Length: 72
Image 1: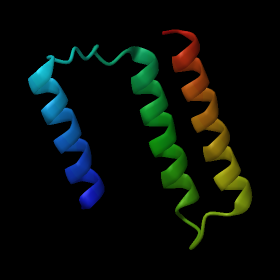
Image 2 (image 1 turned 90 degrees about the vertical axis):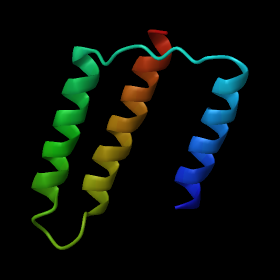
Image 3 (image 1 turned 180 degrees about the vertical axis):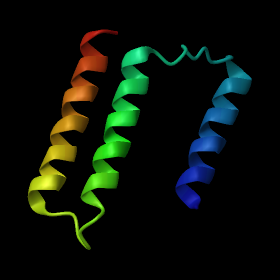
Image 4 (image 1 turned 60 degrees about the horizontal axis):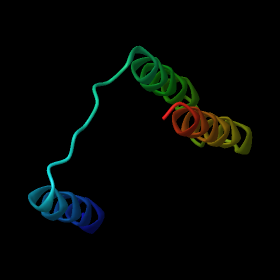
């Protein structure tokens, strides 16, 4: 709860000082969101997420973040 409060507080105060511009969601963003949700749904049939599955999510996160940084 406090993390959400902190994010909204920092973003709210900083947007009062200078308005923030946020770009729209792209097709790639939507595809990553849908694919990660489907993977989580498939992996959730077991009672735990294994190390391999966690590694897949970590690799996907690193890859997507790298893609976003390289294209900005």
